[in-house]
Length: 50
Image (cartoon, rainbow, N blue to C red):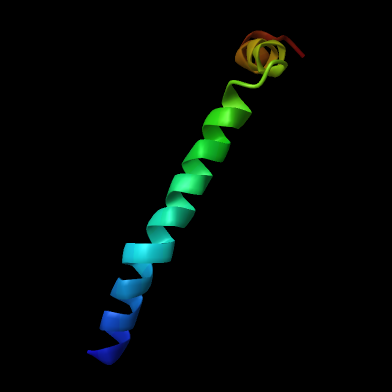
């Protein structure tokens, strides 16, 4: 049980902080100024003919 308790303490403190940082970075990456052009191009990939 000692390993479980150590992992649980890590997840309660640093794990949550890491997940929050990842979420914030993903939001910033998605809403950056140049993202709309790239998102529009990616949305049209299935419609392009070879």
